[in-house]
Image 1 (cartoon, one colour):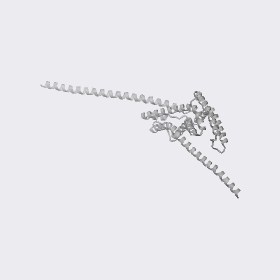
Image 2 (spheres, helix red, strand yellow; image 1 turned 90 degrees about the horizontal axis):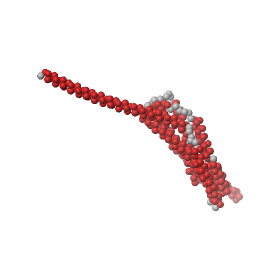
Image 3 (tube, one colour; image 1 turned 180 degrees about the vertical axis):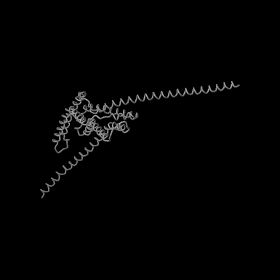
Image 4 (cartoon, one colour; image 1 turned 45 degrees about the vertical axis):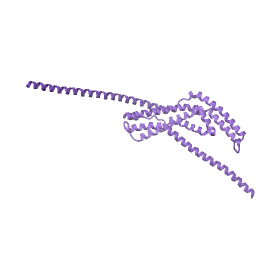
Length: 317
């Protein structure tokens, strides 16, 4: 009887030990799988992090290079020449139309010959500008490059890169913002190339009173496109000076990372803000000029009448 009880106890202990062993093996396998998956995820995340950091560093160097780069205009010369020839032929029509208006008496002016002479002078000046528009456009681009180079100081952005790398989400956002800035500069270079082709048309539109406002609008857009790098360099230098004045390095801090995001966001939002500011300023200046013309017109119409009336009164006396 005792032997049977002993065997039963041994079997019970063996069963419990087997269950414990099985549970231990299962928990060990589970922990190993979890640790392996975690290690694999960490490895993938670290690889993504390192790749994004390297990509961000390369993209930032590209942004700095694009700040002081203007595309060559020589590939667009043939198209510009064809547009110039078409626009130049349109000036003949303008002169014919002006002469016809003078002959049939459409020009309502006290001195129509003077009005026609002014039209001829403006047309000749516009033809000269259209003829040299390619060189004039290149000169404006070179002037912008000189301005940008005079203000440009290669900024040390390593602190912002390190700070961005400390938070993966900020690193992602910064990469997308920098890509957006690069695409903006690529679009600017394409518009600069297209601008030299359509520059003769814009100058022609500025000559005619009905299309002058349209021409001035396109001129404003071209000015913003051409001088955008200069404004970006100026804002970047001011931002870096403000950051340096705040004290010692903020490397590795959240403030540094957010400041770097702010720099890229500022560069990305500068074109629409600058364009809107130029249009507002242009509208204000046009309104002031128009008001001045109206006042001048009223004065020139009023003074001769008063002088004539005074002369008549003197003769009457």
